[in-house]
Length: 428
RNA sequence: UCCGGGUUGGGGUAAUGGUCAUCCUUCAGCCUUGUGGAGGCUGAGACGCGGGUUCGAUUCUCGCACCCGGACCCA
Image: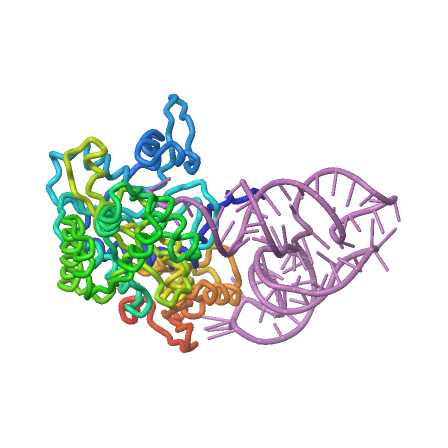
Protein backbone atom coordinates (compact mmCIF):
# COMPACT_ATOMS: atom_id res chain seq x y z
CA UNK A 1 0.00 0.00 0.00
CA UNK A 2 1.20 3.46 -0.82
CA UNK A 3 0.52 6.38 1.45
CA UNK A 4 -1.36 9.43 0.46
CA UNK A 5 0.86 12.52 0.63
CA UNK A 6 0.31 14.45 3.83
CA UNK A 7 -2.04 17.38 3.31
CA UNK A 8 -3.37 16.01 0.01
CA UNK A 9 -6.78 14.42 -0.08
CA UNK A 10 -8.73 11.83 -2.01
CA UNK A 11 -12.38 12.47 -2.69
CA UNK A 12 -14.50 9.38 -3.19
CA UNK A 13 -17.72 9.61 -5.21
CA UNK A 14 -20.03 10.47 -2.31
CA UNK A 15 -18.01 13.40 -1.02
CA UNK A 16 -17.03 14.42 -4.52
CA UNK A 17 -20.64 14.75 -5.59
CA UNK A 18 -21.25 17.16 -2.72
CA UNK A 19 -18.13 19.15 -3.61
CA UNK A 20 -19.12 19.21 -7.26
CA UNK A 21 -22.51 20.61 -6.33
CA UNK A 22 -20.99 23.35 -4.19
CA UNK A 23 -18.39 24.32 -6.79
CA UNK A 24 -21.04 24.34 -9.51
CA UNK A 25 -23.27 26.61 -7.43
CA UNK A 26 -20.50 29.05 -6.65
CA UNK A 27 -19.38 29.17 -10.27
CA UNK A 28 -22.88 29.50 -11.62
CA UNK A 29 -23.50 32.57 -9.49
CA UNK A 30 -20.25 34.05 -10.84
CA UNK A 31 -21.48 33.42 -14.38
CA UNK A 32 -24.64 35.37 -13.60
CA UNK A 33 -22.52 38.36 -12.67
CA UNK A 34 -20.69 38.09 -15.96
CA UNK A 35 -17.43 36.85 -14.52
CA UNK A 36 -15.70 34.94 -17.31
CA UNK A 37 -13.91 31.74 -16.57
CA UNK A 38 -10.18 31.63 -17.13
CA UNK A 39 -7.73 28.76 -17.04
CA UNK A 40 -4.32 29.12 -15.50
CA UNK A 41 -1.10 27.11 -15.19
CA UNK A 42 -0.22 24.99 -12.18
CA UNK A 43 3.40 26.14 -12.38
CA UNK A 44 4.89 29.62 -12.38
CA UNK A 45 8.39 30.95 -11.98
CA UNK A 46 9.45 30.76 -8.36
CA UNK A 47 10.85 34.25 -8.76
CA UNK A 48 7.40 35.71 -9.27
CA UNK A 49 6.39 34.75 -5.73
CA UNK A 50 9.72 35.71 -4.25
CA UNK A 51 9.43 39.16 -5.85
CA UNK A 52 5.90 39.67 -4.68
CA UNK A 53 6.14 38.29 -1.16
CA UNK A 54 9.79 37.98 -0.24
CA UNK A 55 12.29 35.13 -0.28
CA UNK A 56 10.88 33.62 2.92
CA UNK A 57 7.75 32.42 1.20
CA UNK A 58 9.80 30.09 -0.97
CA UNK A 59 9.89 27.91 2.15
CA UNK A 60 6.17 27.41 1.81
CA UNK A 61 6.17 26.58 -1.88
CA UNK A 62 6.30 23.28 -3.65
CA UNK A 63 9.16 24.32 -5.87
CA UNK A 64 11.79 22.57 -7.94
CA UNK A 65 14.11 22.94 -10.89
CA UNK A 66 12.57 21.52 -14.04
CA UNK A 67 14.52 19.55 -16.64
CA UNK A 68 15.15 22.75 -18.56
CA UNK A 69 16.80 24.31 -15.53
CA UNK A 70 13.89 26.66 -14.69
CA UNK A 71 13.13 27.41 -11.09
CA UNK A 72 9.41 26.74 -10.87
CA UNK A 73 6.78 26.53 -8.16
CA UNK A 74 3.34 25.00 -7.93
CA UNK A 75 1.03 28.00 -7.66
CA UNK A 76 0.23 28.86 -4.02
CA UNK A 77 -2.40 31.43 -5.01
CA UNK A 78 -3.97 32.89 -8.10
CA UNK A 79 -3.44 36.61 -7.73
CA UNK A 80 0.11 36.87 -9.13
CA UNK A 81 -0.92 34.75 -12.11
CA UNK A 82 -3.93 36.87 -12.99
CA UNK A 83 -1.86 39.98 -12.46
CA UNK A 84 0.65 38.58 -14.93
CA UNK A 85 -2.14 37.77 -17.38
CA UNK A 86 -3.64 41.25 -17.10
CA UNK A 87 -0.29 42.91 -17.66
CA UNK A 88 0.47 40.69 -20.66
CA UNK A 89 -2.72 41.56 -22.54
CA UNK A 90 -3.49 44.87 -20.92
CA UNK A 91 -4.14 46.79 -24.14
CA UNK A 92 -6.26 44.07 -25.64
CA UNK A 93 -8.67 43.51 -22.79
CA UNK A 94 -11.79 45.59 -22.41
CA UNK A 95 -12.26 47.03 -18.96
CA UNK A 96 -13.46 46.26 -16.46
CA UNK A 97 -12.01 42.79 -16.60
CA UNK A 98 -14.14 40.30 -14.66
CA UNK A 99 -12.68 36.85 -14.22
CA UNK A 100 -13.49 33.71 -12.25
CA UNK A 101 -11.46 30.56 -11.77
CA UNK A 102 -11.81 27.43 -9.62
CA UNK A 103 -8.81 25.20 -9.15
CA UNK A 104 -6.36 23.71 -6.70
CA UNK A 105 -3.41 25.51 -5.16
CA UNK A 106 -0.51 24.18 -3.16
CA UNK A 107 1.38 25.37 -0.13
CA UNK A 108 3.84 23.47 1.96
CA UNK A 109 2.54 24.37 5.40
CA UNK A 110 1.21 22.77 8.54
CA UNK A 111 -2.03 20.88 8.09
CA UNK A 112 -4.89 21.77 10.42
CA UNK A 113 -8.64 22.19 10.40
CA UNK A 114 -9.70 23.78 7.14
CA UNK A 115 -6.12 23.95 5.88
CA UNK A 116 -4.47 21.47 3.59
CA UNK A 117 -1.41 21.45 1.39
CA UNK A 118 -3.56 21.05 -1.68
CA UNK A 119 -6.63 23.24 -1.48
CA UNK A 120 -9.32 24.45 -3.84
CA UNK A 121 -10.35 28.05 -4.33
CA UNK A 122 -12.76 29.94 -6.49
CA UNK A 123 -11.17 33.29 -7.25
CA UNK A 124 -13.30 36.17 -8.47
CA UNK A 125 -11.65 39.44 -9.47
CA UNK A 126 -12.43 42.74 -11.12
CA UNK A 127 -9.68 44.81 -12.76
CA UNK A 128 -10.01 48.33 -14.06
CA UNK A 129 -12.59 49.92 -11.82
CA UNK A 130 -11.92 51.87 -8.65
CA UNK A 131 -15.60 52.66 -8.20
CA UNK A 132 -17.22 51.61 -4.92
CA UNK A 133 -19.76 49.62 -6.92
CA UNK A 134 -16.95 47.30 -8.00
CA UNK A 135 -16.07 46.53 -4.37
CA UNK A 136 -19.77 46.11 -3.71
CA UNK A 137 -20.17 43.72 -6.61
CA UNK A 138 -17.49 41.47 -5.15
CA UNK A 139 -19.21 41.51 -1.77
CA UNK A 140 -22.60 40.92 -3.35
CA UNK A 141 -21.23 38.08 -5.43
CA UNK A 142 -19.80 36.41 -2.33
CA UNK A 143 -23.09 36.84 -0.47
CA UNK A 144 -25.10 35.47 -3.40
CA UNK A 145 -22.77 32.49 -3.68
CA UNK A 146 -23.31 31.67 -0.01
CA UNK A 147 -27.06 32.10 -0.10
CA UNK A 148 -27.17 29.97 -3.25
CA UNK A 149 -25.68 27.22 -1.09
CA UNK A 150 -28.53 27.62 1.36
CA UNK A 151 -26.71 29.77 3.91
CA UNK A 152 -28.46 32.79 5.37
CA UNK A 153 -27.55 36.01 7.11
CA UNK A 154 -27.86 34.10 10.37
CA UNK A 155 -24.99 31.86 9.33
CA UNK A 156 -22.33 34.28 8.15
CA UNK A 157 -21.22 37.89 8.19
CA UNK A 158 -18.75 39.94 6.22
CA UNK A 159 -16.51 41.96 8.48
CA UNK A 160 -15.61 44.95 6.40
CA UNK A 161 -12.78 47.35 6.98
CA UNK A 162 -10.56 49.72 5.04
CA UNK A 163 -6.80 49.71 4.90
CA UNK A 164 -6.50 53.47 4.70
CA UNK A 165 -8.58 53.99 7.79
CA UNK A 166 -6.15 51.90 9.78
CA UNK A 167 -3.12 53.32 8.05
CA UNK A 168 -4.43 56.87 8.19
CA UNK A 169 -5.27 56.69 11.86
CA UNK A 170 -1.85 55.31 12.70
CA UNK A 171 -0.24 58.02 10.63
CA UNK A 172 -2.27 60.67 12.40
CA UNK A 173 -0.91 59.53 15.73
CA UNK A 174 2.68 59.31 14.67
CA UNK A 175 4.05 59.62 11.15
CA UNK A 176 6.90 57.24 11.93
CA UNK A 177 4.75 54.29 12.90
CA UNK A 178 5.50 51.02 11.14
CA UNK A 179 2.05 50.80 9.60
CA UNK A 180 2.32 47.25 8.32
CA UNK A 181 3.51 45.93 11.66
CA UNK A 182 0.71 47.73 13.43
CA UNK A 183 -1.88 46.38 11.00
CA UNK A 184 -0.59 42.87 11.49
CA UNK A 185 -0.97 43.43 15.23
CA UNK A 186 -4.55 44.59 14.70
CA UNK A 187 -5.27 41.52 12.62
CA UNK A 188 -4.29 39.33 15.56
CA UNK A 189 -6.07 41.42 18.14
CA UNK A 190 -8.69 38.81 19.00
CA UNK A 191 -6.14 36.06 19.42
CA UNK A 192 -3.86 37.90 21.80
CA UNK A 193 -4.02 38.95 25.40
CA UNK A 194 -4.46 42.70 25.78
CA UNK A 195 -0.92 43.09 27.06
CA UNK A 196 0.66 41.23 24.16
CA UNK A 197 -1.42 43.15 21.68
CA UNK A 198 -0.47 46.51 23.18
CA UNK A 199 3.16 45.40 23.21
CA UNK A 200 3.02 44.70 19.48
CA UNK A 201 1.55 48.14 18.86
CA UNK A 202 4.34 49.53 20.97
CA UNK A 203 6.91 47.68 18.86
CA UNK A 204 5.34 49.24 15.80
CA UNK A 205 6.07 52.65 17.25
CA UNK A 206 2.91 53.72 19.08
CA UNK A 207 3.18 55.23 22.51
CA UNK A 208 1.14 53.67 25.26
CA UNK A 209 -1.47 56.42 25.30
CA UNK A 210 -1.68 56.50 21.51
CA UNK A 211 -2.16 52.75 21.44
CA UNK A 212 -5.02 53.03 23.87
CA UNK A 213 -6.66 55.84 21.94
CA UNK A 214 -6.14 53.99 18.66
CA UNK A 215 -7.72 50.90 20.12
CA UNK A 216 -10.78 52.82 21.24
CA UNK A 217 -11.23 54.29 17.78
CA UNK A 218 -11.21 50.79 16.29
CA UNK A 219 -14.39 50.08 18.20
CA UNK A 220 -16.22 52.93 16.45
CA UNK A 221 -19.72 51.98 15.31
CA UNK A 222 -20.92 52.24 11.74
CA UNK A 223 -23.15 55.22 12.39
CA UNK A 224 -20.35 57.11 14.13
CA UNK A 225 -17.71 56.94 11.43
CA UNK A 226 -17.72 60.74 11.37
CA UNK A 227 -16.06 60.67 14.75
CA UNK A 228 -13.10 58.91 13.23
CA UNK A 229 -12.72 61.62 10.65
CA UNK A 230 -12.87 64.22 13.37
CA UNK A 231 -10.37 62.41 15.54
CA UNK A 232 -7.83 61.86 12.79
CA UNK A 233 -8.18 65.25 11.11
CA UNK A 234 -6.48 63.97 7.98
CA UNK A 235 -7.63 63.89 4.41
CA UNK A 236 -6.54 60.28 4.08
CA UNK A 237 -8.85 59.09 6.80
CA UNK A 238 -11.64 61.32 5.55
CA UNK A 239 -11.35 59.87 2.03
CA UNK A 240 -11.12 56.34 3.32
CA UNK A 241 -14.20 56.71 5.47
CA UNK A 242 -16.09 58.23 2.57
CA UNK A 243 -14.98 55.38 0.29
CA UNK A 244 -16.00 52.77 2.82
CA UNK A 245 -19.39 54.37 3.29
CA UNK A 246 -19.88 54.53 -0.46
CA UNK A 247 -19.03 50.85 -0.77
CA UNK A 248 -21.45 49.95 1.98
CA UNK A 249 -24.15 52.09 0.37
CA UNK A 250 -23.52 50.33 -2.93
CA UNK A 251 -23.91 46.92 -1.31
CA UNK A 252 -27.39 48.05 -0.32
CA UNK A 253 -28.25 48.56 -4.01
CA UNK A 254 -27.10 45.00 -4.68
CA UNK A 255 -28.98 43.48 -1.77
CA UNK A 256 -25.92 42.59 0.25
CA UNK A 257 -25.85 45.35 2.83
CA UNK A 258 -27.30 43.19 5.60
CA UNK A 259 -24.42 40.75 5.42
CA UNK A 260 -21.85 43.46 6.01
CA UNK A 261 -20.66 44.66 9.39
CA UNK A 262 -18.11 47.34 10.07
CA UNK A 263 -15.13 45.76 11.75
CA UNK A 264 -12.08 47.97 11.81
CA UNK A 265 -9.97 45.30 13.48
CA UNK A 266 -10.28 43.15 10.38
CA UNK A 267 -7.08 43.81 8.52
CA UNK A 268 -6.15 40.72 6.48
CA UNK A 269 -2.56 39.67 6.69
CA UNK A 270 -1.75 40.51 3.13
CA UNK A 271 0.42 43.50 2.58
CA UNK A 272 -0.89 44.21 -0.89
CA UNK A 273 -4.37 45.30 0.09
CA UNK A 274 -4.97 49.00 -0.40
CA UNK A 275 -8.61 49.80 0.29
CA UNK A 276 -11.67 47.95 1.44
CA UNK A 277 -10.86 44.58 2.95
CA UNK A 278 -13.26 42.01 4.33
CA UNK A 279 -13.42 38.56 5.84
CA UNK A 280 -16.32 36.15 6.01
CA UNK A 281 -16.98 34.66 9.45
CA UNK A 282 -19.28 32.05 10.89
CA UNK A 283 -21.67 34.05 13.07
CA UNK A 284 -21.90 31.21 15.58
CA UNK A 285 -18.12 31.11 15.92
CA UNK A 286 -18.09 27.33 15.50
CA UNK A 287 -15.78 27.71 12.54
CA UNK A 288 -13.06 29.49 14.44
CA UNK A 289 -11.20 31.03 11.57
CA UNK A 290 -12.04 33.28 8.65
CA UNK A 291 -13.98 31.33 6.04
CA UNK A 292 -12.47 33.46 3.27
CA UNK A 293 -11.50 37.00 2.55
CA UNK A 294 -10.90 39.57 -0.09
CA UNK A 295 -10.40 43.20 -0.78
CA UNK A 296 -8.98 45.89 -2.98
CA UNK A 297 -5.41 45.79 -4.26
CA UNK A 298 -4.93 48.79 -6.51
CA UNK A 299 -1.13 48.75 -6.67
CA UNK A 300 -0.43 45.17 -7.65
CA UNK A 301 -0.80 45.41 -11.42
CA UNK A 302 1.50 48.40 -11.56
CA UNK A 303 3.90 46.49 -9.36
CA UNK A 304 3.89 43.73 -11.95
CA UNK A 305 4.92 46.19 -14.64
CA UNK A 306 1.50 47.10 -15.98
CA UNK A 307 -0.28 50.41 -16.27
CA UNK A 308 -1.84 51.48 -12.99
CA UNK A 309 -4.97 49.34 -12.74
CA UNK A 310 -7.28 49.17 -9.75
CA UNK A 311 -8.37 45.71 -8.68
CA UNK A 312 -10.66 44.06 -6.18
CA UNK A 313 -11.39 40.41 -5.58
CA UNK A 314 -12.28 37.54 -3.31
CA UNK A 315 -11.12 33.94 -3.01
CA UNK A 316 -13.58 31.36 -1.70
CA UNK A 317 -11.73 28.44 -0.15
CA UNK A 318 -13.55 25.13 -0.36
CA UNK A 319 -12.05 23.75 2.84
CA UNK A 320 -13.38 26.40 5.18
CA UNK A 321 -16.52 26.87 3.13
CA UNK A 322 -17.38 23.20 3.59
CA UNK A 323 -16.85 23.58 7.34
CA UNK A 324 -19.33 26.44 7.38
CA UNK A 325 -21.83 24.55 5.24
CA UNK A 326 -21.57 21.49 7.47
CA UNK A 327 -21.99 23.58 10.58
CA UNK A 328 -25.08 25.23 9.08
CA UNK A 329 -26.48 21.92 7.88
CA UNK A 330 -26.49 22.83 4.19
CA UNK A 331 -23.65 20.63 2.97
CA UNK A 332 -25.13 18.53 0.16
CA UNK A 333 -25.90 14.91 0.88
CA UNK A 334 -22.90 12.76 0.13
CA UNK A 335 -24.58 10.09 -1.95
CA UNK A 336 -24.66 8.96 -5.52
CA UNK A 337 -27.96 8.75 -7.34
CA UNK A 338 -29.03 6.72 -10.31
CA UNK A 339 -32.12 7.22 -12.45
CA UNK A 340 -32.43 3.69 -13.80
CA UNK A 341 -30.98 0.28 -13.24
CA UNK A 342 -31.68 -2.11 -16.10
CA UNK A 343 -31.83 -5.60 -14.66
CA UNK A 344 -31.21 -8.61 -16.84
CA UNK A 345 -32.69 -12.01 -16.20
CA UNK A 346 -31.69 -14.87 -18.45
CA UNK A 347 -30.44 -14.18 -21.94
CA UNK A 348 -31.91 -10.74 -22.47
CA UNK A 349 -28.69 -8.88 -23.01
CA UNK A 350 -29.57 -7.47 -26.40
CA UNK A 351 -32.93 -6.01 -25.38
CA UNK A 352 -31.56 -4.76 -22.08
CA UNK A 353 -28.65 -3.08 -23.85
CA UNK A 354 -31.07 -1.39 -26.24
CA UNK A 355 -33.18 -0.04 -23.40
CA UNK A 356 -30.07 1.10 -21.56
CA UNK A 357 -28.78 3.02 -24.57
CA UNK A 358 -32.19 4.52 -25.17
CA UNK A 359 -32.42 5.82 -21.60
CA UNK A 360 -28.88 7.15 -21.70
CA UNK A 361 -29.55 9.00 -24.93
CA UNK A 362 -32.36 10.74 -23.12
CA UNK A 363 -29.86 12.00 -20.60
CA UNK A 364 -30.58 9.67 -17.69
CA UNK A 365 -28.02 8.11 -15.40
CA UNK A 366 -28.37 4.42 -16.19
CA UNK A 367 -26.55 1.32 -15.06
CA UNK A 368 -26.99 -2.29 -16.03
CA UNK A 369 -25.36 -5.57 -15.11
CA UNK A 370 -21.70 -5.79 -16.08
CA UNK A 371 -20.75 -8.42 -13.54
CA UNK A 372 -22.94 -11.38 -14.51
CA UNK A 373 -24.82 -11.31 -11.22
CA UNK A 374 -27.94 -13.08 -10.09
CA UNK A 375 -31.33 -11.44 -9.90
CA UNK A 376 -31.15 -10.87 -6.17
CA UNK A 377 -27.61 -9.54 -6.33
CA UNK A 378 -28.57 -7.14 -9.11
CA UNK A 379 -31.44 -5.75 -7.08
CA UNK A 380 -29.18 -5.34 -4.10
CA UNK A 381 -26.72 -3.49 -6.26
CA UNK A 382 -29.48 -1.30 -7.69
CA UNK A 383 -30.44 -0.47 -4.13
CA UNK A 384 -26.86 0.32 -3.15
CA UNK A 385 -26.37 2.83 -5.96
CA UNK A 386 -29.62 4.57 -5.09
CA UNK A 387 -31.47 3.62 -8.26
CA UNK A 388 -34.88 5.26 -8.37
CA UNK A 389 -36.31 2.84 -10.88
CA UNK A 390 -35.30 -0.65 -11.87
CA UNK A 391 -36.34 -1.95 -15.26
CA UNK A 392 -36.53 -5.71 -15.14
CA UNK A 393 -35.80 -7.17 -18.55
CA UNK A 394 -36.52 -10.84 -18.02
CA UNK A 395 -37.22 -13.75 -20.29
CA UNK A 396 -40.69 -14.16 -18.82
CA UNK A 397 -41.53 -10.48 -19.35
CA UNK A 398 -40.24 -10.50 -22.90
CA UNK A 399 -42.23 -13.63 -23.69
CA UNK A 400 -45.31 -11.51 -23.05
CA UNK A 401 -43.82 -8.53 -24.88
CA UNK A 402 -43.30 -6.60 -21.65
CA UNK A 403 -40.72 -5.28 -19.25
CA UNK A 404 -41.33 -4.82 -15.54
CA UNK A 405 -40.83 -1.32 -14.19
CA UNK A 406 -40.18 -1.24 -10.47
CA UNK A 407 -40.09 1.89 -8.32
CA UNK A 408 -37.46 1.17 -5.73
CA UNK A 409 -38.69 3.43 -2.94
CA UNK A 410 -42.21 2.00 -2.84
CA UNK A 411 -41.53 -1.40 -4.32
CA UNK A 412 -44.46 -0.91 -6.69
CA UNK A 413 -44.04 -2.51 -10.06
CA UNK A 414 -45.99 -2.76 -13.25
CA UNK A 415 -45.76 -4.36 -16.66
CA UNK A 416 -45.12 -2.07 -19.62
CA UNK A 417 -45.07 -3.20 -23.26
CA UNK A 418 -41.45 -3.31 -24.33
CA UNK A 419 -42.04 -1.21 -27.48
CA UNK A 420 -43.63 1.52 -25.41
CA UNK A 421 -40.76 1.77 -22.97
CA UNK A 422 -39.30 4.23 -22.17
CA UNK A 423 -41.72 6.55 -24.02
CA UNK A 424 -44.84 5.71 -22.06
CA UNK A 425 -43.40 5.90 -18.59
CA UNK A 426 -40.19 7.84 -18.66
CA UNK A 427 -39.32 9.49 -15.42
CA UNK A 428 -38.90 13.24 -15.58
C1' U B 1 9.14 24.40 12.54
C1' C B 2 6.87 24.04 17.59
C1' C B 3 3.10 22.14 21.49
C1' G B 4 -0.80 18.50 22.92
C1' G B 5 -3.68 13.94 21.85
C1' G B 6 -3.96 9.66 18.87
C1' U B 7 -2.89 4.99 15.44
C1' U B 8 -5.92 -2.82 16.28
C1' G B 9 -9.58 -5.61 9.19
C1' G B 10 -12.64 -0.64 4.51
C1' G B 11 -15.40 2.01 9.03
C1' G B 12 -16.26 1.59 14.50
C1' U B 13 -14.27 -1.27 18.58
C1' A B 14 -12.62 -5.23 22.88
C1' A B 15 -8.80 -7.72 25.21
C1' U B 16 -3.90 -9.49 25.90
C1' G B 17 4.06 -10.10 27.64
C1' G B 18 2.59 -16.63 25.28
C1' U B 19 -2.52 -21.60 21.50
C1' C B 20 -6.77 -19.64 16.07
C1' A B 21 -6.83 -11.43 18.52
C1' U B 22 -13.14 -9.91 20.23
C1' C B 23 -17.60 -7.97 18.65
C1' C B 24 -20.57 -4.71 15.42
C1' U B 25 -20.61 -2.97 10.64
C1' U B 26 -18.85 -3.35 5.61
C1' C B 27 -17.70 -6.08 1.21
C1' A B 28 -18.18 -10.68 -1.84
C1' G B 29 -20.76 -15.25 -2.65
C1' C B 30 -24.67 -18.51 -1.45
C1' C B 31 -29.61 -20.02 0.69
C1' U B 32 -32.71 -17.56 -3.87
C1' U B 33 -31.21 -16.76 -12.66
C1' G B 34 -37.84 -13.69 -11.05
C1' U B 35 -37.59 -9.67 -6.61
C1' G B 36 -33.53 -5.13 -2.76
C1' G B 37 -34.17 -2.78 2.22
C1' A B 38 -35.41 -8.77 6.97
C1' G B 39 -33.00 -13.44 8.32
C1' G B 40 -29.39 -17.54 7.93
C1' C B 41 -24.75 -19.76 6.09
C1' U B 42 -19.75 -19.30 3.95
C1' G B 43 -15.73 -16.30 2.82
C1' A B 44 -12.48 -11.69 2.62
C1' G B 45 -10.15 -8.29 5.72
C1' A B 46 -6.20 -5.56 11.26
C1' C B 47 -2.15 -5.03 15.63
C1' G B 48 1.33 2.14 11.21
C1' C B 49 6.99 1.55 10.29
C1' G B 50 11.85 0.70 12.39
C1' G B 51 15.06 -0.21 16.59
C1' G B 52 15.52 -1.77 21.88
C1' U B 53 14.22 -4.84 26.37
C1' U B 54 12.55 -10.16 26.50
C1' C B 55 12.96 -17.14 25.58
C1' G B 56 8.74 -14.59 23.35
C1' A B 57 6.25 -7.70 22.02
C1' U B 58 0.04 -6.00 19.16
C1' U B 59 0.96 -5.22 24.61
C1' C B 60 6.74 -2.27 27.77
C1' U B 61 10.35 1.41 25.72
C1' C B 62 12.71 4.81 22.07
C1' G B 63 12.71 7.00 17.25
C1' C B 64 10.08 7.98 12.80
C1' A B 65 5.72 8.30 9.75
C1' C B 66 0.82 9.46 9.46
C1' C B 67 -3.94 11.31 11.60
C1' C B 68 -6.70 14.99 14.79
C1' G B 69 -6.44 19.67 17.28
C1' G B 70 -3.65 24.13 18.28
C1' A B 71 0.64 27.79 17.71
C1' C B 72 3.55 30.34 13.95
C1' C B 73 2.14 31.82 9.10
C1' C B 74 -2.00 32.82 6.10
C1' A B 75 1.71 36.13 0.65
